[in-house]
Amino acid sequence: MQDRNLVTITPYNDGPLIVRGDFEILRQDGTDATGGRKTVALCRCGVSSIKPFCDGTHKLVNFSASDDE
Amino acid sequence: MSIATDRFSQAAPSLGFPIAPRGPLSSQLVELLAKHPHDTDEGASLQGLVTTALARADIISRNDDIQLSLFIFYGLHYGIFEGNAEQWEWMPHLITARTALEQAFESELRDRVEVPDLPDVTRSAVAKALNVLTSAEGGPSLSRFIAKKATVDQLKEFLVQRSIYTLREADPHSWAVPRLTGRPKAALVEIQADEYGGGHFDRMHAEIFARTMRGLGLNSRYGYYLDDVPAITLTSLNTMSMFGLNQRLRGAIVGHLAAFEMTSSIPNRMYGNGFRRLGFDETVTEYFDEHVEADAVHEQIAAFDLAGGLAEQNPRLLGDILFGASACLVVDGWAADHMLHSWTAGTTSLRAPFTSAT
Picture 1 (cartoon, chains in turn orange, cyan):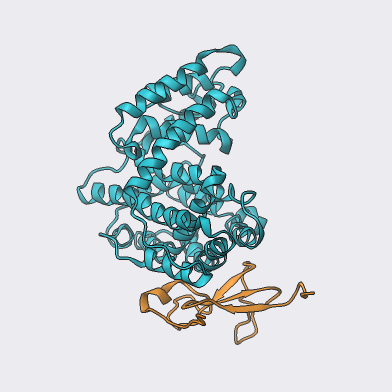
Picture 2 (cartoon, chains in turn green, yellow):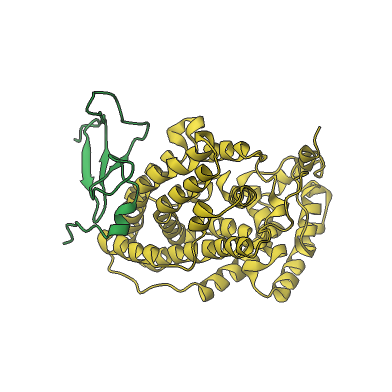
């Protein structure tokens, strides 16, 4: 039975890492950058202007990374 | 008391809402809703008025009387009216009339909205097809115009146009929650919970938008500007309401939400830039900044888990999922084009220009 607090990180094809669960996001100085959102998207392509969060701009650079069957 | 507050106080007492009819059908509707259903037989006249309105309409999506009437019918379900109007929600004459309008409206949309070839029924193929659909280069860009060129008055018009939907943001898609089951239902709730601020009133997207409106000196009460917006603006909301309120169209509302979320983050950054360019602060721009981040999450859930998941769960809905997504882009494109063409031509996109009394 799945632990309700388990953090899951799921890469979405050609897009960000979707994080769910009981996570915290910290800055390098230790301060909290989690924000209030229950599900977040972390930038995988490197282009986001709001890192560590995704801002959708991976589409503009045709970021490609998928585990298509 | 300024003239501006009189719009609601002038409204028919038992409707509680300012609506100026736009033809015989909406005129009869407004008159009807002010009475109690038990006090009138005139509901029976609606069907004939619908038939005439449809016969006379050139393009249903641009017809003021029909689109305002649909807005009113759906408004009964959204609960935007007060008094006697509340008694009419399920009255058979109204349901019959609305269903007749919907049949013609849906038929026109299916005729005019081009749908791409259907992908394989897998999450990743469906998401990829939606990605291709929503990445296609459109015409000249409303968001770029707002980012770089719009005046303060045009920004106000933009907010007024958007307010018809956005002051009730997410409600049209929420209709689908009871109509879905299993994993797609969970995906929809994951998105919608975030739209409603996770249950925090101040973080509800509709409320954040209300703050943006007030920051531009606009009235944020729902429907205040209804009489100012053209038919095409109502069509955008009516499309969502029709999809959301009909079980048989649940594929379409899912596709619509996916396309909506997938075409949000980048334009919202541009809108925010436009407001910043004209000196507005975070109280005003919070709505756009929030959507850049939120919809980067939502678009993934909507494409893969919701639309892809629904197609896997029920492959017969695949066609409607792609139809709903395409319809979102086309209809919202018409509304955006109207704004862009008006402003480029130096005229108002509203039915009449703003006055100091608006």
